[in-house]
Amino acid sequence: MEPTQNITLTIPKNVLRKAKILAIQKNTSLSGLLTETLVEMVRGQEAYEQARQRGMAWLEGAFDLGTHGQTNWKREHLHER
Image (tube, rainbow, N blue to C red; front, side, top):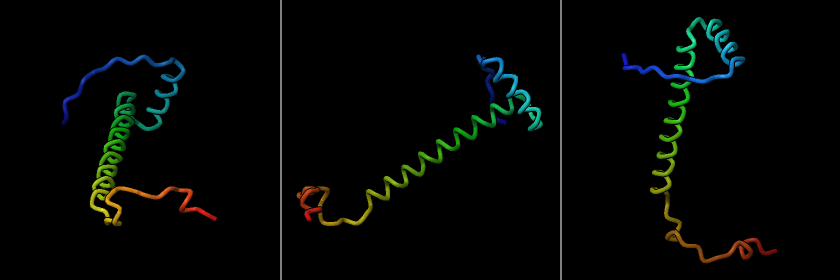
């Protein structure tokens, strides 16, 4: 089991009351509900960061289109009518 740490939160009373009801409906404690929500948020952020890093690595290894990272044309020239 991971070590835990107690924290103090300041929450509007109406939100706290609704959160307690939600926790009861989910058969958990308010602490458990908050922990589950924060864990999901952190995992989502970690997954996003991993995907971003994979995407950046893919771009680094992408095909060389012969431009060597330089463009010598202007948008207006590409879209001349």
